[in-house]
Length: 359
Image (cartoon, rainbow, N blue to C red; front, side, top):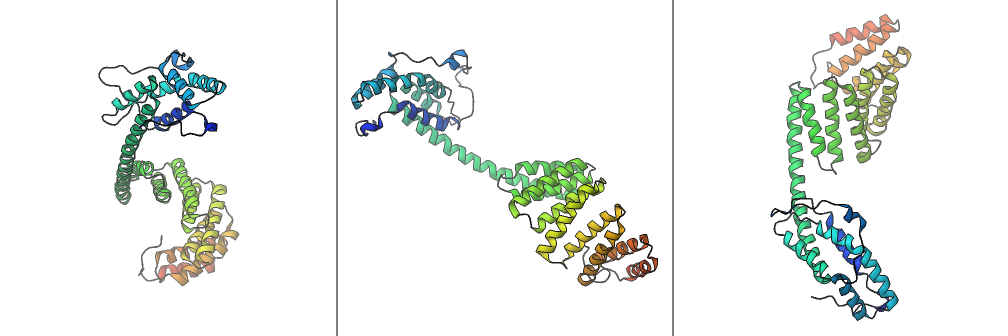
């Protein structure tokens, strides 16, 4: 159907150049470059493409627009302005449409027909052809995009499973590469899942001896968890502990301490003061103080951690045994040998564990 310019209000005028540019520009980004086929060489941009010399008044497109403006009753001054604008923009529009290389089968003809229509001043036809071409390419592109996303997600999940098995088999070097690939292949919206895999990647790097990349992975995972879960979530505390462990292993105690302290505050606030995770946080911070030689700060933390474990775990639980030994060790370092002996004897006399090992 032909467009009716007579129905437009007088004040609107005809912004044809801008209209065509908008239609073409909306679809240019949907196509990727490919060969023109049929032995036709691909156009290489040259100097002439950058100059954009205005078209002459004898150009069919120019003459067609001039006739439309006259038919619309546009005044001479407004006609002159519109025609000047179109003359300066035509080469840009023409080049974009010429370089529009559709990917879909059979759409190259539509592109060539649209270009011919533009050159002939058949603006209605040029717009209709480019719009239909854009719709078809867009629909196919979205279908392929959805399929690709599902395939990448399935591939990432399979790689995570394989990497987890490598970790069970104590092969972190093999797991690391798979975790790295999975991180990149997960959907952009799967931040929480990506954070989980980044923590696994950090562990694999740590066990492989690559502490620097372990820090990078744990830090990136921490930022994603803070973004998705907030700053006061237990998973954030776990990520903080993981990151602090790397700094602790590298004797970077000043960097590890604030991370351990923040993890402790989160777990106390969210899980409660007597939760086993709080005992783990207390133990981590106390051992750091012990490494620094600050036994006075370590002793009350280990004592409180042991108290939580005694109320939480069965006698003989590995975490309880470890808590007794850690506390006895600090007491001995403080010169309180008699007290230390009591806790050492308790650790040695506890029955075998009746529950699973502590995390």
